[in-house]
Length: 200
Image (cartoon, rainbow, N blue to C red):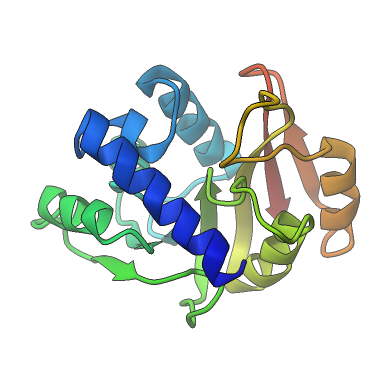
């Protein structure tokens, strides 16, 4: 993703934050908190996270961590995002949680810690001048997991949509199978959305 695309994403979130405020699903770009919550819960169905490490790319406010702590214990968590206001909010939200770090940066441009599980909710759906952006991201992110990588993408978007884009689930499946035969797609939870589990 080039600097022009990154700048457009930052402007999008700055505008949404000024309109809806920090801490809202809308400022993250989601249509509603209910749909956001469903996506996060589906991601965590990839496996048992107890006493494992998790990397959350495009972590936003760390909402995934809230569900991790609800369902599992002993999880060492790292979240990364390139929009500083999100990270400031997340850091304040989880200031007392042990084994928790939030990093500021583009997850495709900075070194990432090797983690048991890697998660990406929404962060691979941004529109890019590179039509294969998500494929490139998968190639970079899957090697950072020891056990599994879970991510979601859109299978359809409105014609007027300028910030996010859709992908063909079958093409994504075929690409992921080039990394591992252990790939599962979930597409029965929200219209226009699908989740991919890649396991070692």
